[in-house]
Amino acid sequence: MADKLITKMEKNSQEEIHFSLQEYRGTDLIDIRVYYGAGSSKRTPTKKGISIPLNRLGEFMANLAKVKKAING
Image (cartoon, rainbow, N blue to C red; front, side, top):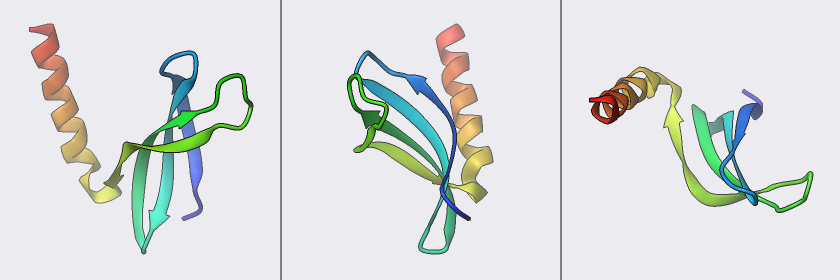
């Protein structure tokens, strides 16, 4: 799998969060990473982020749903 940016969102005026599909050592991953670059069209990835194997996406989403439920009461 070639690296593929799926979407991104602004974190603050200098950072964005990128959601990408990637492959690392033969494992397909969803990478959620903070990119830095104020006023630049080319952003640089930081060490801040998480990579989740595709086969664990369901578990990850279930845990996010629990977080949402805890927030909403």
